[in-house]
Amino acid sequence: MGFLSALSRWLAPQAPLDGALRQAVDRAVEAVDPLLKTVSGYERKLAPAVSHALGYCETLAADVPGPIEISPRAFSADSLVHALFAAPGDIGDMLCKSRELREFLADPAQCEGDEFFALLGMRRREKAVMGVALHGDGVQNDVPQRLLYFADHTLGEIGGDCETTRRRLQAAAFDGLVQGFAATVADLRQERQDARTAWNMEQATTGRDERRQALEERQRQAIAALAPERLLDAFAEWLAAPEGRLYLKPTEVTVDRMGVIADHPAADGNFSTLNFPELVARDRRHWIVVVAKISRQDAQEALRRQQETNRYMVI
Image (cartoon, rainbow, N blue to C red; front, side):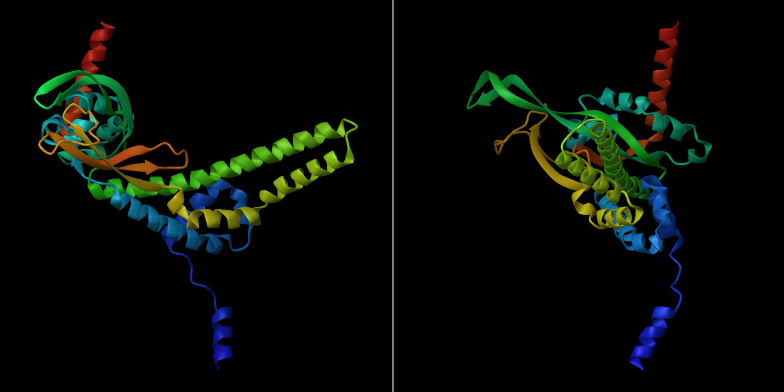
């Protein structure tokens, strides 16, 4: 009876994939290589890995700190915001330079709400400077110091509420994983082309048989690596292990109000310990990321000031 039950379950038609999961699988396949669809049962082979990657990206999006108010007012009250921007006016400069923000505010469907949310990303930088430091009761000049600052502020995944921004961040993280594998496939295609070129050049010479055999084997391996069945298996393995390809790296740094890094701050000094995550992706360039809460009025005023400045420049 047990054998017959197992056989009936094996022969029974499998339940269809969830609609959202099917869409994610199809989007991933289209981004990597549509020929993956020629593999029998490709959706079911890829679905568990896609589901795992989506769940991982959801957790990653939830772990990004925030929402944190980003405004000239917060610059004075919040030590983190004070560290992220050199001056209050830099916040307005960031807002007016964001094309995605301009498109968001111009959309009639996004007119509700006094505030909106976005993923704020930036690069962490350090600069060696000579500064002033207190030593006992005296002041010492020309002290080597490290100055913490941030550059390349970017807004993305804008939404009218925090949940929308985190959902868009989840989708962007998943797309990033997919694009990472697509880049690997592009490298394999380049290797196939290089192998073919080397083989063709060797054919025009009177080279050694060993050389030709090596080039022939290289070309064979390059072609085999791009076989749809093999690519599908590699893609599933890639998505099943996203932890090493996209992750948040906790970072802690102690600074004073001027942004000078204090490796051993005095107990009675005016220092702030900042905690923020660095988002590490396939290019290994770290982004500091937080979910920002931004006043619609602040954003509109920043854009208005920019428009006035542009108009005066034209005049």
